[in-house]
Length: 146
Image 1: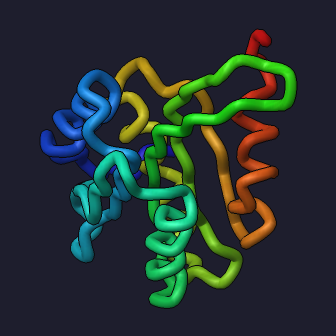
Image 2: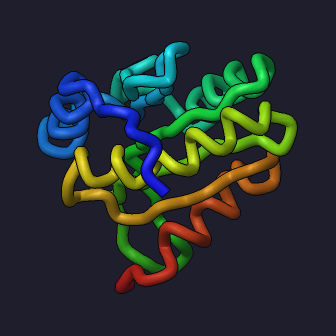
């Protein structure tokens, strides 16, 4: 189901920058209040942490809203080499407004298509346990080669 929400060009440019230039650790995207466009809400520099990312997502939750996130993860599992993977996250908290959940779910594919290739994994989160780093790491590293 397509929502008709458009993706602003700034989102595409920021995605290319995080993918190629590695200047940012994460980007948080939101749907504008008129429900017409997806725009950047926040970009964090390369020194930001996963905990910063989660806290920024929870700001939206306190307003009863959903968000999309893109995080450039660097990790090393026991006995393996270091990995770096860009993952896409749909944050749709259980207590978000129903209209928010519907519009974010139906607009996700439009954003993914607009961003193009280069996203290693997609994660969907509805509560704190879904956002826990160990859970996310398990999801994004499933197909890693050692």
